[in-house]
Amino acid sequence: MVVAVRGDFYGPCAAHRELAEAVSRANLLVRPMSGDELRVVVTGPATAAGVNVETALTARIVDEDSDQPGAPPTLLHALLET
Image (cartoon, rainbow, N blue to C red; front, side, top):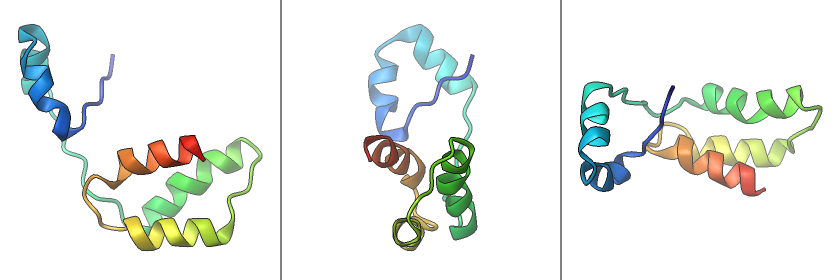
């Protein structure tokens, strides 16, 4: 099983002993994504689903979120809502 926890949620995880121990044993720091990586993350799943993402939207996402720490989870939420 894989569980993803954003850094700002580590505090609440610490309130649960077994969860805190699991989180402390298995950490993977996700680095900021490059513009090319973001473009693939945005357009790849859409293409697989037979949906096109507007070029202007992709360009704006890449422009605003490239090399920004914490962007992937925020971007995922925004795209799901969109």
